[in-house]
Length: 218
Image (cartoon, rainbow, N blue to C red):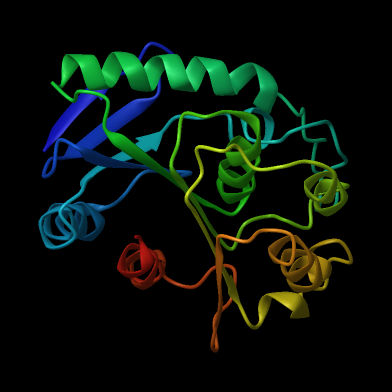
């Protein structure tokens, strides 16, 4: 297991396997010891190198445009994704060069707001072949309509969206629309795999959900 610092000061943890396929996972706080063990095992089982990223400004770097916060007294989302994405791509390229990856096929996986960012990135750049959102914050103001008005990058071969079947029960009016809006977005994506996970909430344990997504990667 290697830990490096990327040029945008994101901490990266690498589980190496294939040099032709690499998956980046943007996490709020990284992975604990059990998650790091899972990374090592999963990299070998799925024949794909896995990189866990942390240190992102979660509410600001991952949101595509400014919007109000979701909880009482929460500060607004800054909407800096358009500034962050090229920095992230540059950081990824430097990371791959430093770790002897030669133009690998890239997957980007996000959870919650980073899931929103992953899907938005699939529309906004050609750096990734696959993008996946686990409980992606696709309720984000105006995002479903934006997706309907834009096309995925031609580089995208697969989109995987998973959602817990209990997430629509949120007491927050915006977040309670997540299933309706996710399914609206799915209807516009020919290469989408949509999984509604039974008896699952936004905060269910992440490792089984990551395992599910990896099992569906093409």
